[in-house]
Image (cartoon, rainbow, N blue to C red):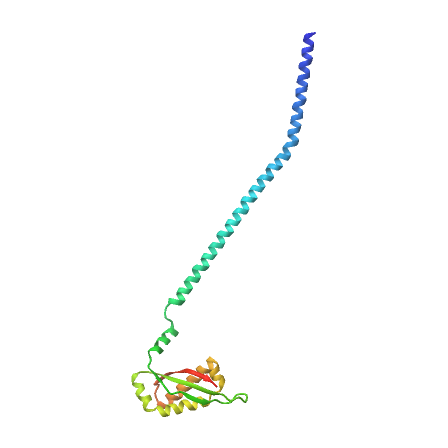
Length: 198
């Protein structure tokens, strides 16, 4: 009898134990998909955080690289423009600076009327001469040179003085007329100083 009771208890405990194990397995199965999803979601957030950190870092790196390139190119262009080789225009400026100048007394000239408005020009003219010997010729012929320049100025209109291209054209005409009178190219250029329209 005692044997029978112990067998029944063993059977109950084994059956009860089996039921408990079954319950645990069922709970594990139910809990495992949720925990797996939670784990994968957490991992996804960590990866997204890493990716966003990397993309921000890469963005900063690219921005700094572009900025560095722009600074290097800008600095190079500045140095080249400031200290580059002498081009034709700079050579001409240096050549003009070395030429002797002969300054004339100021002119006060009425210009041709434009749109019924009369204007006067007060200007000081300097002659750029080809060499030292040419100043002697200019001094000897000064009255005739002034007359030639005055005739050219009397044919000018206000816009010849107001705009740079008009002023340059007028100075070229004056240089040509003086050289034609002298019969030689002694005057290499004309300079206006203190040109004022009244």
